[in-house]
Length: 353
Image (cartoon, rainbow, N blue to C red):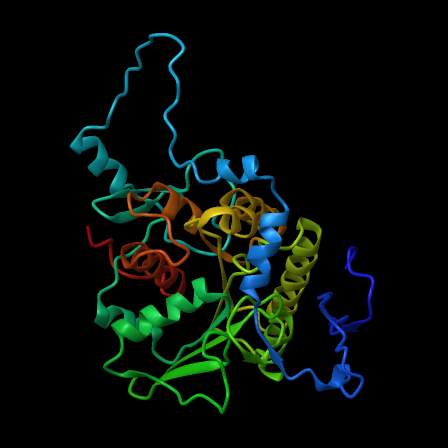
């Protein structure tokens, strides 16, 4: 709010440290209490982005994969592991993924081989549909964050859709923001999704349906059959690092309090991922460079607490041959789901290679 000097409505949530302001209505017949709907104004954002860069600066962001001018002739010898060496790497006897898996490392957290993700830190079981159902029996999964974690729930709905069914939405609920859920009566599996709260860059949403992630975590009773998967990054690329760090500190504190109530609750953090960029707007508001800075900030905060699991979607998406998109292709999501299920059910048989 440094630039805007006019009257505002303060919708900050002091208990969670989340600040949020809106311009106060100019119509004197309206007050801040009349604020009922929220929408991300992408048109205004596009206009704002163009004012932040000169024409010359903006043109730089339209250059993709520009050739590097060779200054001198030199040779580079590249060694590639043999099939035997790759097979040995992929069948290493690593412990199953569990909370405490490193979030930061001087080398990549894993690699793809034949479209299968192999972690350098832990073993990941490749779950069949029947194994996934058995693993999730009597479990409640909370997906908290943005559309990149909602994508996990949608993946489960597509794969387990024979028994896992969407629950009816409440009136006027924007399914992109939630809350919405799914239930498998046969296997007693419950899945719930809710957005992390403001900032939100989605279509029209009833303001009263929006709640902050900290508040939602505070309502979770927890237990050995409860799983919380959380992320927060894609909607924060237009905020500053201090604001983001404060929000993540609040989320971490809520997770710690959840574990005080229910130490057996599994919490898994999903990292950011690489994404597409559409011209100047994408360069300014959805920058990979800045998303990586947010991701590093999140990892610095959560790496201090070894009781959470971690899904390194950044290394998965940056090392796969598929195009960068904010919602990674199914092949990448499937590998992330296998790792998530390994966190939930680490005592599966030997890896299915």
